[in-house]
Image (cartoon, rainbow, N blue to C red; front, side):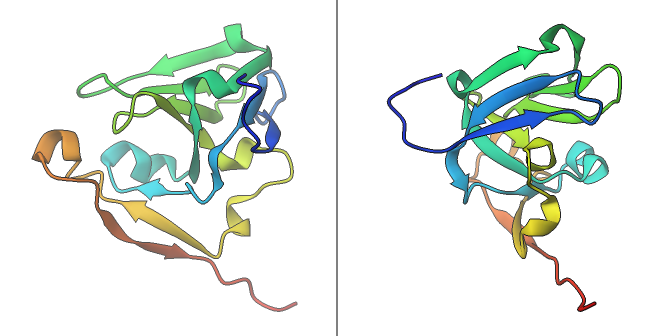
Length: 144
């Protein structure tokens, strides 16, 4: 990992703990997002951004499996044992990984009151346009 950065390093793991890694988030949790593309709609994870060289696998890298579809630009990685999506190399910016926020130690997708949802149906790489927020996903916990 690039030691010149000052952002916090997060420990992370899949559900079963076979895949363990450390990651430095490019913009902290400000980069949180979801997406409306067919795949992300079904996956449902909140992703946060990291540069490619800001992830370090501590264990289980050989236990990751890769899924690609359509243009095969994005590379989605999962633990072969528990099936949890850990990260993906972004189609919108292949110099970044999207990290499953739920894999970060002490972080839950329900920690975010609002999560921007990107328009992945009209992906900028397909439409020639720019990235667009399609909406905001909100979570309001109920009092006990």
